[in-house]
Length: 83
Image (cartoon, rainbow, N blue to C red; front, side):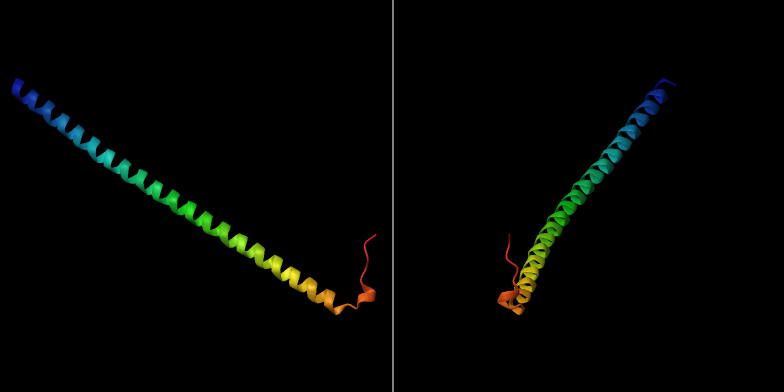
């Protein structure tokens, strides 16, 4: 009986160690996936900010163009002077 108990104990230890290795491997994969997703989110944020900046510049340019065309269409006498 003594040797059988020792063998059962040893097998239980090995099974527990194997489960721990599998769990650690799974956690490492989850950690890497989270890091990858975080990097992709940062890249998407950077791209969206750049696109937003370009859009703001283009809207500003369009507004200036429209304002200058409207000012050119008015005769000089109709311009309103400040104050």
